[in-house]
Length: 128
Image (cartoon, rainbow, N blue to C red; front, side, top):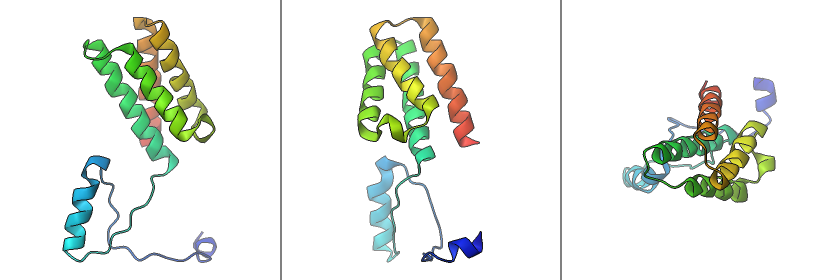
């Protein structure tokens, strides 16, 4: 593997960290103030899918508590389909997103439970 990777330019790093989007600006500001070189990289597909799954599970919890409308689950699905395209997402996640849009049209507890179970299973798989 190292022979294969030797074809590419190496980037010296002292630390690689994953920073939540909402804290990114503050973290970059502090690092630059301390004269640290900062490189921001895009998350890989699994990271994107993990974020989408966590958003879905948070919204499902809010729906159960009566704090969100089923249409909000559809909005998550539609926004992510538009942003990433189904071709760029795994088949399992694509199916869950489609089910989220169907759920908004005909919300039943059985469908909500099914979406939640499959989203949790896929999240566990992505997180290892």
